[in-house]
Image 1 (cartoon, rainbow, N blue to C red):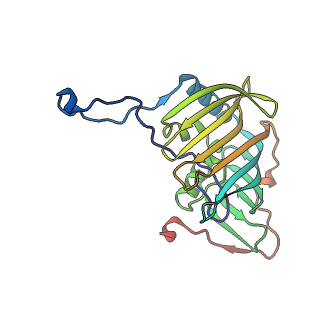
Image 2: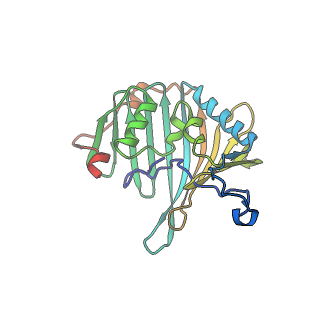
Image 3: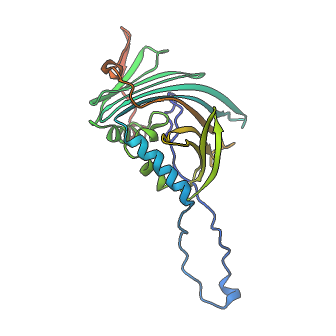
Amino acid sequence: MRPLPGLFVALMVSAPAWTSLAHAQSPAASGQPPAVTTTPPPIVAQQADQLLKEASAYLASADQFTFHADITFDHVLPSGQKLQFSASEDVALLRPGRLYVEWSGDLGNRQFWYDGTSVTLYDPSSPFYATESAPADIDSMLDKVLSQLDFSPPLSDFLYARPYDRVRANIQFGIDLGLNEVDGRSCHTLAFVEKNIDWQIWIQAGPQPIPCKLVITYKTMPSQPQFSADFTDWDFDPRIAAPVFTPDLPAGVQKIPFATVSAAK
């Protein structure tokens, strides 16, 4: 997930190179002509891949859900010092075209609404908000805000109709570390490697394979900052009231445009 500069601290699973496990013999030593080199295929344990599929399918099968996440994230100063901050996020989703995200944290608060026709972003500490037309389904909306407006709500990979498809193509190595406890819940612990990040996800064992925890390490960035989220209060029958997805803005706030990717370039 891409960052929302100055507004959201986001996570987006994008990907790191994995060193080949095979040690190639040099052509000079073997007396053979140089072989054509190819990129080795991803090495992902079958159990890790299956658990990721099951969690994705469970989220995809839900017409609506809400959850809460307690988040910590690092901010690296120009000096190299790494500072840690905290935030919380509440999400309400109703397929095919409704989403509300509320972020409260040490570095400020944000609200994000999607009502099936437009997206709206508001910073309660400022007298401004931004809104933009959007496609009629959540997947297309998230693709648009990422590609054209250069941000996405934190944890947005979990909001797509097929979360597995969002992340699997980037994974180059993955293992199942077995069962561990997260806040009293027994969870499968999975670890994955991509080109630019390493990440771990804990998936609840049993009939509800929901995310319990996520940790991302941005290993190509200075000081390798981390983002972590502890998930609680999953509800798959929340009966979300329609007004939740309608922007609730105080009187007197001023509309400003989003900065587009083309304008930034």
